[in-house]
Length: 225
Image (cartoon, rainbow, N blue to C red; front, side, top):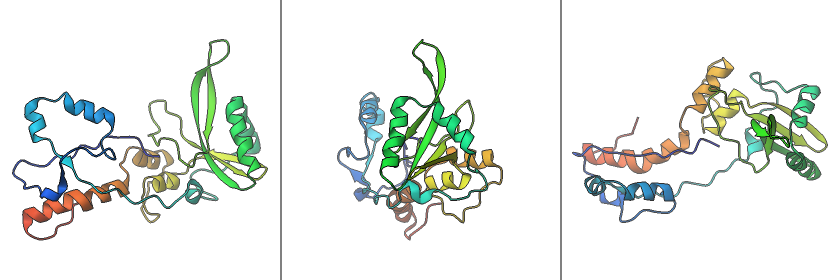
């Protein structure tokens, strides 16, 4: 999952915006409540210049989390059994029950884990490992500022193994093709993808907003950079 972001799209005042790109009112698909509230707090002058973009719904995803998992990535080798056991020992009963539920399905299931600081029963800070099996990766972040790196937990029948999310897997989460060249250094590759924008999102905006505006300006079809 990429970080949740607002993408504000602005156009120069001298550009003619095709009428089919402008909606009469905000669509619930693209305008969360927070944005509507913020818009209502803008000055009347800015609101007069505001455009609610008319944007079609993007295609549904066609990949599951297990589809992007590498078998033997060079950038993130699988943990030893002892390392995986230490990871499981950091989990609460609720999280361990998620693993047991995944095991009971008798098939290959991929989950993701983040280590977080929580208060224990005595009110003291303790590091915990929290897993999710909802077929959505945790928020992809840059490996800086104390943020823990995301861990892959693969349950296949009775076996459980773990490792860091590989650099290629982070790129796949961001919609980059496998022939996209990543830095050889793991942290540099993770920083590149964790600090980027999702490629299919940019393509969708380019096709339905950027390029139609550029085409109208030049009189012929142009591709956005």
